[in-house]
Amino acid sequence: MSAAISDVFTRVGACGFLHAREIGADGGNEVSVRSDERVVLASVFKVFVLVAFVRAVDAGQLDPSGRTTVTARYRTGGVGTAGFTDDVEASWRDLAHNMMVMSDNAATDVLYHRLGREAVDQVVSDLGLSETRLIGCCEDLFASVGEDLGGGSASDLKELLEAATAEQIWSLSILDPLRTAASTPRDITTLLNAIWTDTAASPAACKIARDIMAQQIWPHRLSSGFPSDVQIAAKTGTVPAVRNEAGVVTYPDGRQYAVAVFTRADSLADRLPAVDASIGVAGHLAVEHLRTLSS
Image (cartoon, rainbow, N blue to C red; front, side, top):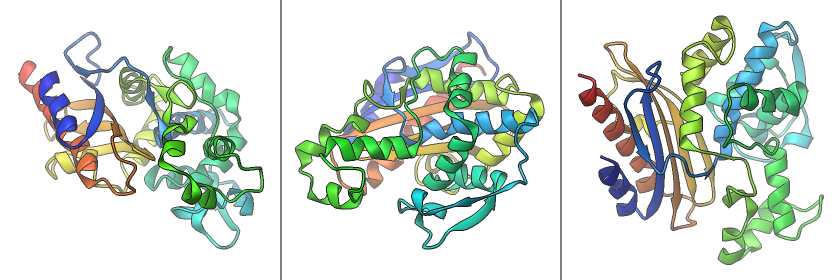
């Protein structure tokens, strides 16, 4: 099965990394494709921010209905409040919703700065994710790109990227798991298992996290490989050449599986639909194999 899944990625011009396991089945069957190698997280790191958020709400440290303003500082372009023309006021829980459902970078950073780096990093240490390293929020990732391309604090990131050569893009620190937010597929399925077994936070807090993740709007990666009666709760991640998705799939019989799929393509093209689809194909192969093993 590992060879078959690896071939899925090879056929679309990508290198793939995958780990899949049944929720709650500690020490049980697994599917592993380079699952202990470090991979670039991209926006998958937002799952850690989500756990820190539900913990803070559960501890009474943050009123989820409290309101804040997303200002021009966070207006980097993209979906949600990150692409708004004007400042917008929103509740903390709506920012958490935007962060996960549509991967709103501005919502992520406002929430991250409210929670604090220590609270997010605490999630990593509490769950014993020794191969996971976070470097901050989206703002920090964008700053690393500007620095790598020789820009200053006032530089336009879009202009820097448009002027960059392919060689410069490939050498960006955000594409190097040794220099950016990184983890392993196995660490990420451990995180997902903790959320789904109520050990990442209190049962009530974990349910909030699960409910938010179940509302993600992107259907082109993990979801594309499964029939419509299988529920998907997941988070994507994307930077040049990198397409990821990690989440939990729930079958009609109630059995649940954590799946983490990370890819690095041979191409820097903005659109790589075959690579996107390979995430769903590989995820489905892995889960169906697990179901066969335990039937």
